[in-house]
Length: 310
Image 1: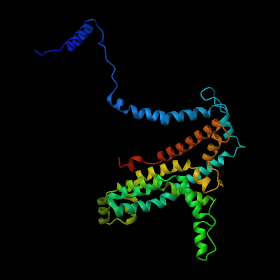
Image 2 (image 1 turned 135 degrees about the vertical axis):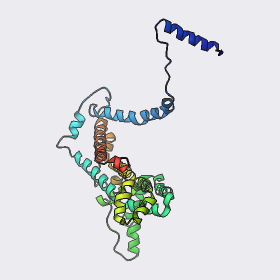
Image 3 (image 1 turned 30 degrees about the vertical axis):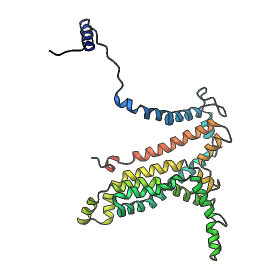
């Protein structure tokens, strides 16, 4: 006969009494272990990600040029943005155009580099590509000002060419072209690293088998390498587009504000103009446009085929 401890016998008696009385036995509420372990991460995301977004969204509907957040509701800020006399839409157009151009340029530049890294270094390609991330440890503004000193009149490039007997360097600063160059330079690691990981997913045995069966180099790239590497390529493109759409330092430092990005208008609204509701409304519209475009691109792609699912 099993031996029961005194607390266990009390629990059994309580259950028998509840059953005899036709009542359900009391159940203790227990939080699942997974939720308890994830609670620090959930709390961090709520405080560090969700709370700022909710605050910005609340400010977007506050009274213009006030701090009546959560105490007022008005569409005046969005009405001011959508006013036909307002030219802020040009800032949106410039930001999206430069973001799209940066993605195209980096896709063309980073793919051969990632392909070469995988062919030369093989499984060490991911580690070698991390070397391209080292510039991120230096401030973006410092790196951009370095390019200003390089291209500046009587700077490094101009002075060197004059010493060699040439007329001088080209006038490239404060132009849209140098802004695109700066954005491609800054966001290259964000495109290269996911693309390198994507190309590393392509089995070399599969490529060799296709080559032995008579497939051409173009057919191997189109039917094998590109589809299998597409998840990494897509991640790099979306990450680069989202980051480039919010760029501001490149246009201010290299472009000399010859091109006004939407992030510059948001900064002005939050600082000099002290119109936080208008800046929040601009930020909300930018988030909606960028996320909408990203979701639209994802919806047009066959992810099951890209990820190899049938």
